[in-house]
Length: 538
Image (cartoon, rainbow, N blue to C red):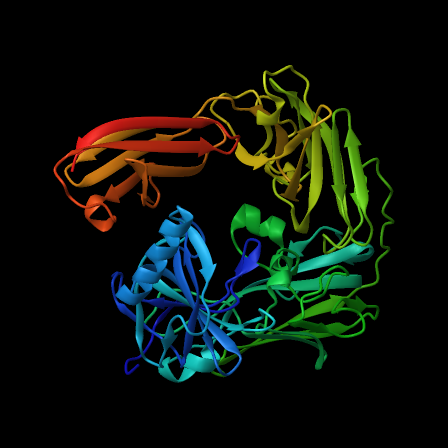
């Protein structure tokens, strides 16, 4: 590698439900640029997926790390042969499989693939990750590529948010979370702080996450974060380090400088008060955020808060249900039961379970005031089927986004009855009149849906290209397979499209100029199956 690297994204940027696990390297808005192994090793994993990482390879190295390369356009011919052999042996296009060390050794700098825009990618680039081979912990690739990147621009703070602790703190006369504006702020009691900031680089319009954050109060550090070494098991805890509800509404991340009791992120460190500041003297408290990027570019952001003695109102208990972060909680309504195991939340969450409407197959339920409230691991939701159906195994749970209370919605009636609002497929298993599924978000609206119709399949022969247009009006397509004269042929689904294609010259079929029969089968999430045939000459 002899040229300077520019970044579209850096390691550890907060995203909904996960940290950005690597560096996004720009490819000048082009696909097809050569991707080379970062060090000696062997290709240990190949993935082909329409979502997530797209086309990807993993290379395991002798130093205990594994590098991963995502959103690839294609692989080198050697890897393409290994991939196609596996796809045909398992009769599927989307695959995820591992290779032994002897299958494909590579040397540092060896060409292994070509950059692309596959999977959950919104523009051509290369996503690079560095992972501990034995633990799966993700590390900042800057430790390997920093010498190829030029950055002299310091981070920038955009805003400060405060979180008076429930029944224990007050800020500017209120117990509501709010932004710090100017130097006239007053507070009393226990207060948590959060910061919205971005890092920058010269000659780039992108903004990036912050590597090091430190909060000092009167010169003493009460909190620090070093975003490096993130366990995949802790990925969803980004939702409680950041103010997820604010992000969901405004799309800006305020990252808290205090650690909630259920937040186990190992990259966060705080004093004995978990970073919460106890303002208990009538004086000026001097605060300072210190932000530093990987290259040592530093920003200091001082502000002050005046301690002013105030009576802190007690918090009255309400009729809402509370999900405790440190114990298993069950929430029940007529025809609905939700079980959330302990350790799924950063702190207690207040709920107001309610039936929000009546659908064709069940009532609709909302348990959380927020439109989205993600869990770390997941809970178990059960909904009772209220209408008879021919085949209960084809009943499933759907989720629909509901407006947050902060957006002014007091009722969600109508959302479940809207025929154009089919919701997102969740799934589930039917037993004894109930459908049960695992959910990872307790926000929104949940109800039952039913799908006993097979997908629609239209076959088109265009010269040496076979095309299948597959659509499903209900739960969505789960899988498909195609055979020509009884022999499996590989079809590839085009990204962000309902079309699945096969170029005959890429298959094991030999051109014989005779009539052939194509048999294409599509199966949806509920197991409804459609087989369509057509004849062509090849």
